[in-house]
Length: 311
Image (tube, rainbow, N blue to C red; front, side, top):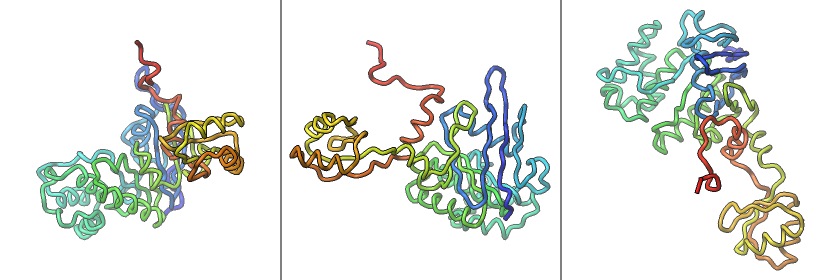
């Protein structure tokens, strides 16, 4: 596998009055699953289309193994992609769909059968693709992306339509692709799946990169120094901790998140106040919490909170 990966640098693109990309820059490294996340309209799909040579930009470059897509002689051997699981001929079998793609790239039937097996579609290979479920179409799209044994793989929302078994399969499969040295870019709005799959995260908003960091570091920063408390006497616990100068938020019927006090101090205060508790631990934010905090100012359409609803 090449060590170059995918390098996106300074992409700017305008559609009329709309600035879709505003200096988008990031790198997808070989051997790493990189998650591309952001609100609707953030520029995720446009960026992927630019990388794949489907959209032109006003400024900037998108290189795969050091070259723009249009200069790749056999593109599927360098980069595989899934942008739209519905982009297939419904009257063709899944195998014939892949054979058609393979023929255009000088690949044979043996490779088609290999990727069908990898994607778990061998038993359904001769069924018409028009009868596939969305999850099966996603698997077929992933198989198509792997036809050329590419060094880079781009997948847009690969978890959509997957049942629980399929989601577990996609997670493991993407990690295995990275373990083989491939550069893997996955766009998804399902934060739990990105958290369990990606090593690195590129969060975008309004056409710009707003975070480019490891998933672990982003979650660590969002977790801060707060403490999680589990207690059957939440009001009493809140009163004791607030009196000691803490900021306390209820995160569940029996759980509180406490900021401004160390865990040891929280334990001492609750014990001294005869407040029953079953757990005091460092709070670990979810990727969804970290993502929402990051994109708070980058969402184009936002619903009113209950306090904002006009009376």
